Image (cartoon, rainbow, N blue to C red; front, side, top):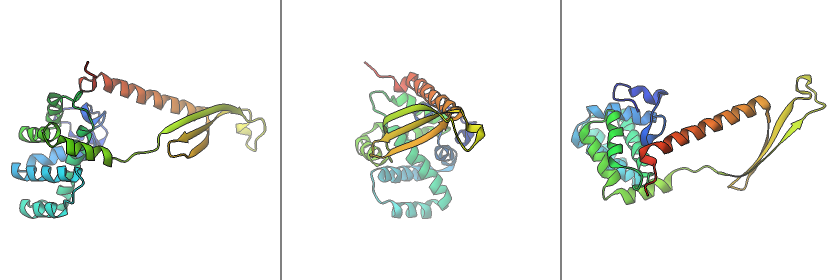
Length: 218
């Protein structure tokens, strides 16, 4: 992650650390907005965020904060959304590989004030972690995974389009974990694009695994 001056990361810049290669825009907005928030208000917002991670109703608490701290609904939305995303991503990482020092350094690079970094760290690495961690992991949305993938090359000898005659294409069939099957056809150019993007994802995963926070300790 770039240091405090590069808060535009969420708009498409590079990132890093536990948040991945790109800083989520809501975290970026929170990091900028939280600098103008008092310590007492921040801690109330943090408590609301932790309660939200645990599945509790926080509407009344948010309303009270808005009235007492003189924050607009938009400001509250930016702050709570960013804090929620930051904590959710941090709580997904096991303590055996996720180091507190690295977490703190990542937050400092975002421009989050030192006192608030300590408070964030107390949630992620403190006594409340098990409850928050379990909820954050079970509530995340899940997409079906690929169970089986088959493909073959096909060449159309006769077709209504002369441009496609004798042009190879790739026929693919995916079976997903939810029991559905999808068949589709790819021209060679699109298949090459697919190969490139898969290779790019694998490279980014490999780069992340090389970072100290993700290395498995013996």
